[in-house]
Image 1 (tube, one colour):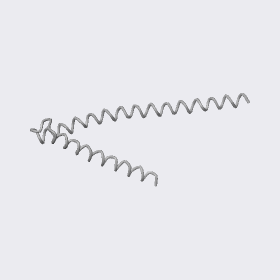
Image 2: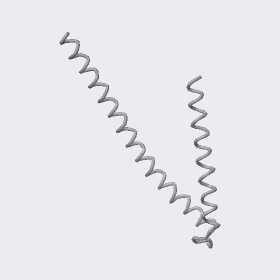
Image 3: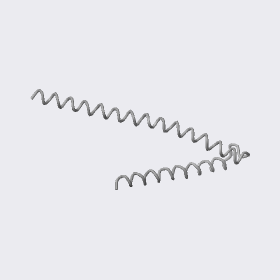
Image 4: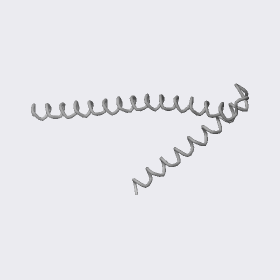
Length: 89
């Protein structure tokens, strides 16, 4: 009986450790994703400034930036969702 409780506790402890490791990995991955997102933010702003140099900080430049980001994010999410659905099939 005591041996069974010991195995149950060890199994629970191992599952808890794995869950913590998965959570930590997801937090680290989210942090790297944020860094990558900020890098793309600067790159796209640089492109807009390069191709439309006189806009500066106007509303047109901000709307153009928002439109580009929306299209890019929409396409990426569309293809990610599509690839996940293909993996399930």
